[in-house]
Image (cartoon, rainbow, N blue to C red; front, side, top):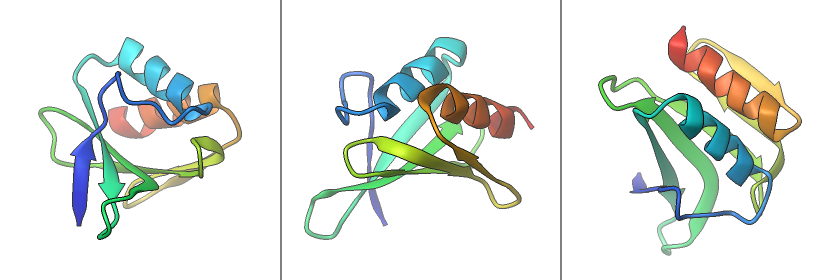
Length: 96
């Protein structure tokens, strides 16, 4: 699986950008990556982790960074209808 780092300069043009801004504001040590398809196109699946921890969350969204969002790890899945709820789900699962 190919990914690329999703830095603050990267945007989807949708509400997901605000969710990631909220996550980064509360967690300076977060790493966000986006899955890249075999043809080089970006996918709507993101991987989120803390720098010092290899365990990752997955965040899925609709095209263009639109909700609904699904935030999951190997044990839990949280559906989020907006940016604030998606950011809260990321914090909850990363800090668990």
